[in-house]
Length: 104
Image 1: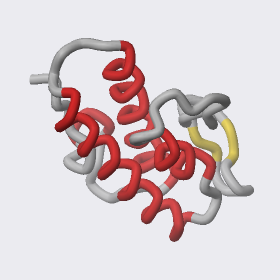
Image 2 (image 1 turned 90 degrees about the horizontal axis):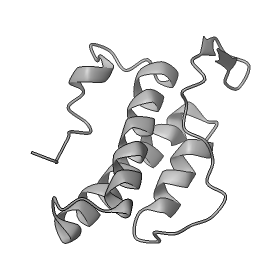
Image 3 (image 1 turned 90 degrees about the vertical axis):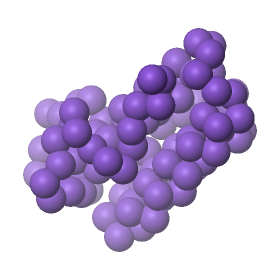
Image 4 (image 1 turned 30 degrees about the vertical axis):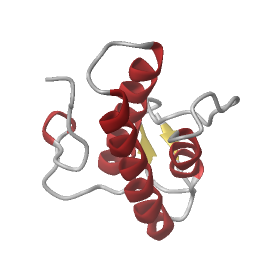
């Protein structure tokens, strides 16, 4: 468990800041969300990251790829931020409507 911005401890499954941007279509928005400390700004960053991921999923489709795996991992990281940092009401990691599994 770690503390975010002096607040209550959250799991160490929080997304890690990116060291290298390999996918500029969505990683900058993801990085901005993963490193945002202000809860009010985090909401905006999460929405921007989600939108960037959804746009990219529409372009690359369901075919497995290294980028697709990175996107799935990023989506899971955003879910952790939503649930554990923002304490989004009524959400569980497995049933979030904000970010859905598009691999079906």
